[in-house]
Length: 582
Image (tube, rainbow, N blue to C red):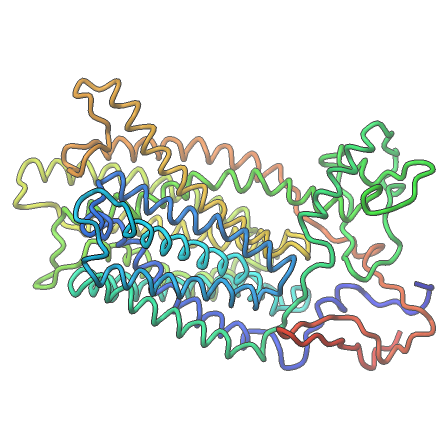
């Protein structure tokens, strides 16, 4: 472009289209998330009992199947994030994967309704096995794909520069919508599933998810929809890596200003150079007598994008253990509750409804945190979110350690009482302590990670980046299954009874408390690891002075400059900046 009128890049890129975006648009997303989680969370916490009683899985088999299902669900979120960043906008991605989720609930309802479609013993085979695994695979794919694109779509509705802390507030209320729907699910739907029939619980999940998608679709006229990046995010990463390897023998300049950067490029924001991972800077060194192409020389901003993603990896790894602990509260703790006194007066609480305790805590604490703590902390720290995202995650990790220690102590007390007098088991309320603390931990960690990955991610990778939160959850659930198998295998060899800590279906004959102590100790070591990487991490900073200027040609009409592509499903329009004078 010729030198002429200059417009600040961020004000152009983040300009809010009249009548679109903001909390009005996100309210449709809140409604969808609440209704979707009514069924999903309720059935995930009760699935371990469904697999035990209807599908005839043993204790470790049912627990591992649930954790593998949840792990697959969150792992597949990366597909939704990748597609929405690369090929489709986030709205269309959610619609496609949402259809698969609805179909999965329909198939699970059919199998739970007719006994002929259920195994007669612990042998799951033939057409029954095909129907079961097809339905759970569709559920994992559909739910995961939706979660990969949805958080970033909601955050896109807000102008980061002009709305102080709006993105953080959005994620806080997104979590509130999720836990509110989950609280309804683990009480009403779980009670219906365990007392009236599992098929009725699946049917209600089908209905609430379907209604949620209708609400989500009705919000389409209010959404700000961004087109996918011109260059796929994984291709951009690969370009930097390949170019850095090609240029590995070149000498880095003493002054980073000599690295290659386009003077003006309206398609991408400029990111300031950092000194970490200097080996990648070689991708921005211009070789002599070489034509500048995307696969021969990369801009500093593109190199910094790869550095950002690389810096995120240790943060992801440092949160996996916490999610492994979460898996235990959704599997073994439910089985604990099934063997405890669940009566409150004449009403008997279903064992899978015990997780409502942390959900209720979160329903109360999230508004308090957002409306009281954040403004108070903001005055002290001057940070839009009150405390940084990594500080918030750290608080959650500490609370998860405390939760697992309490879980071990409660299991010791439960087991002692059960062996002493099986007719007078410990009351289920004792589980509320570990659940409540972990619920608060989840409130800090989950939102902190979502906001962190969204804000720190390069613009064209935000769906993919927010899916890193779900990847951490996924690895946590898979690691839980691996720990159960490994610990069972090891303890079988060393114990005099030749029986593993978690063998069989009788908790009173197992050593679940030792497994909880193992996770508590592991969480302590993990927290030390997290502190190191959180202190090492360098937050992204945009180069506002030299890189965020867009140069427009002198011949262009300043009053009508096309600057922003907005995709409303199939309609692509060019919006202009009106009445903007230099």
